[in-house]
Length: 253
Image (cartoon, rainbow, N blue to C red; front, side, top):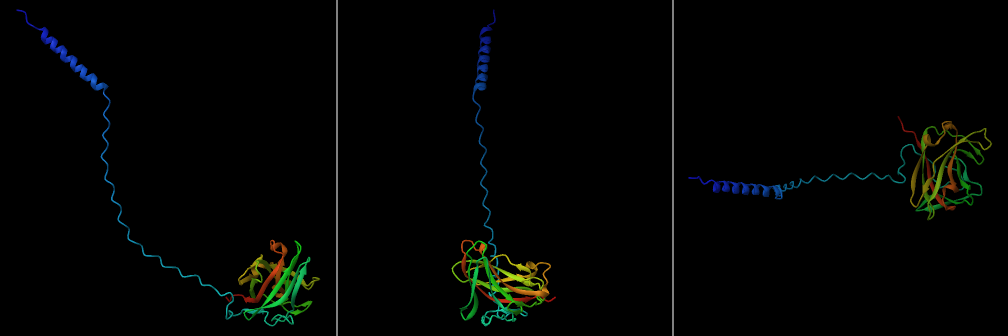
């Protein structure tokens, strides 16, 4: 009797074929998309920070008056223009007046402003190099200045303002007396151009900043203003007001 083996072999072969077909199908199938990672829960917002105490307001800077009253100890008024126009003698007894250069012209008058008298300087500077201004001897008559020792003082203060609708530029000068010079004039120290605007401004001229190291402070001659055409921009004429030229003593050690 012959043993029947074909059906079993055939079954094995069919099973193997099905198995291989299944493996081939897995190999050709598209890869499964990666599973999205689970979203992290949103972080809870920080609790509202405790309110900080408001910064204490800083005190406002102390506004100095344009002109102190009473005057600080030791300040020595040189010319306040209250009673010095006629005759033209400063409070120290020196002669004062206007000067002109290269066609420039300064006309002096006294202006009354709220009961205070100010020096009114009306200027006209027709050429590019025109100048004019004032000179005020520290001592001495017209044409005869006398030396004055200004070494006890560290500066000069004064008030300046425009006398019209325009802003003007003014320099302040301090001059040494040189008896060997034809005009008795030695070194001159001057400020940069100072603004004369619609409000009064108090300026201070510190000697250490404007005087030449060789300036002999025991031989001060005069002070005054210079109005230079080149400093005025497009405005070649106008009015400036000047007041309260005062010497300030050196600080005591």
